Image 1 (cartoon, rainbow, N blue to C red):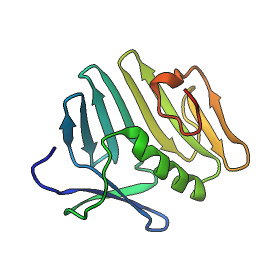
Image 2 (image 1 turned 90 degrees about the vertical axis):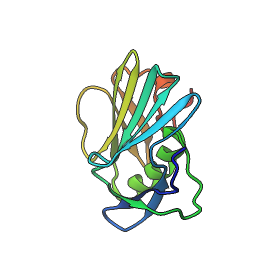
Image 3 (image 1 turned 45 degrees about the horizontal axis):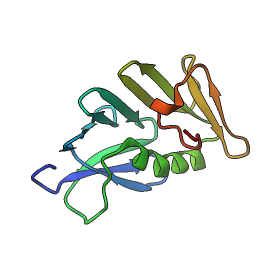
Length: 144
């Protein structure tokens, strides 16, 4: 864990909703880092597999002092509340997924991009477009 209690707060660009995320931190099998420029969280698992989530089209990011918030060092625990909030503003909502042997990247967008993405809508749930290994991705609504 980091020595200070400073962490980050994501703020919705449309309504001011906030969500707190950890600063760069690590545990024995996971390292969590934040790219402020791209508003992106990254988890490195066991030093061999990386999962990231970028939300810069929907959120700004600022460092904040300790606020006694419960902070999660995982993409999965952070993607769910962010996903539900973004879908409240943007329907359909697109989660662009890119995968390699050792990496899965997730990027939320307002329009589809590339050949592998998930299209979400409040009425229809979601459609997976392209070849996505859901066992190595964090896709809200998908069961593994």
